[in-house]
Length: 72
Image (cartoon, rainbow, N blue to C red):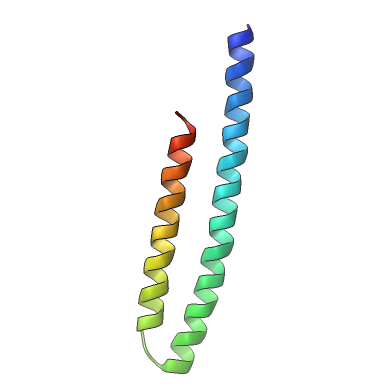
């Protein structure tokens, strides 16, 4: 019975940590999209979108890796 309670508690903590990682990455990605949009508008170049899109991809991949590590 105590093992079940410990696993349940660990799972809940991992869930909260995963939620925090997902939410913070989402906020950063949304700010990046706004900045990229403004830079594309003012520079008339696609490079800001490509650069920030790559950074957002790396951020999401890092977050996914961190979330996967929580289950260990």
